[in-house]
Length: 199
Image (cartoon, helix red, strand yellow):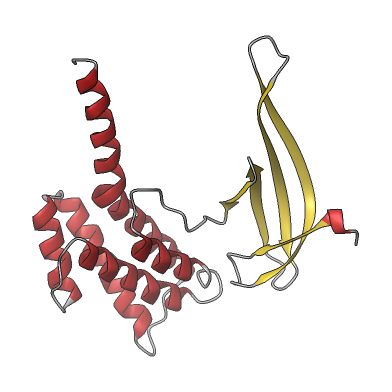
């Protein structure tokens, strides 16, 4: 297969840095109002991993490659590297080893608590303290509890986490990330901007 038909990239399904076959490609360009000057250019790629044969959708923009599917580990500027790192590790095993994914997400929850200054050794207590400290709604506390229990389930022999449970765990984890980091950062940015406008 020609070099143009392959790309070496990290597979988020099997966790290997491996050649991927380019199954399809689509170019998209944004132009200025007159249609004369290119503003942005994106390349969308449908890839198949040479190791595990799973497919992925990537896009390239401004010399930056991002995975659209499966989900990439980058959670946003407001999320600390310790939390992002644990989530990235989790994604590399999500499809192959859902139980290992659950354990890694549990570690990401521990990292979240520590980064927020909650250092209680028992995760259940740490999550309760985190919810109280940040005045999070009751649903956030419930999601944290279920996420922790699924992480525990993944850590014990004889109680494997299913793919469906792993997907739910990821949804709950990302919702907690939104509550703890993303939404407060966005709110702060917009409050500052509105304040400058005298609103």
